[in-house]
View 1 (cartoon, rainbow, N blue to C red):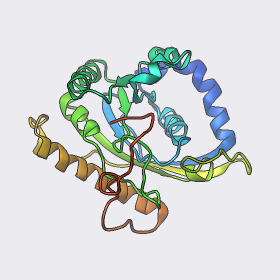
View 2: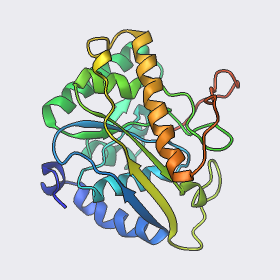
View 3: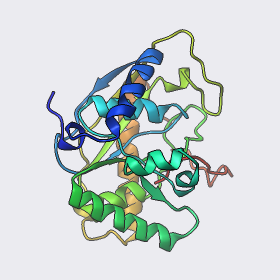
View 4: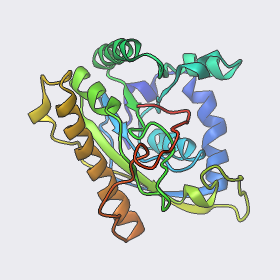
Length: 247
């Protein structure tokens, strides 16, 4: 498999992957479907249903030939050691509290993506899904906005099986080892109708719904069942949104 310069060039990803890859492989046997671009920037948008799934996604992306960089809560960058790891891996901090700050950070991240050709992983739901059956819930506009601002492909992805390792807000389950999980990467979305409309809230909402439909369709193939006709909306169900990974 060919790999991108961001993976083949020496970096902190090398020693960390030497630890993470065999550890995750011991816990889960992940089947990978689809491909990522060998070169160039992109935004990868997977579903989010378990505290453990970032590790599954990160290792899958690494094995697909790209370096796994996430958008992460800015507060995590202040945590000792964790913050250092995030910084040396060039993860992207996101502020939740201020819309103006968040917009500036998105623009800065987009400029960095376009200039460096790196990929970034963004959870469009912003946190763990609140859907009782773990289907993707209503998405936030961050992933779409970032892809449009940077002018890079927006790629939907889905995974299934992480809930057997760590149920949402549940306890880690190590035994039996090598639980099966699946990770699939879809085709880049056609966002041509939204180019130049990065500040149009209606356009961003429409494009985000398109993205969530694509992620849900991928997950339906993994689960071999249909998702509910109405997507879970935490604002309608009076749910408080929390989590480490933001849109």
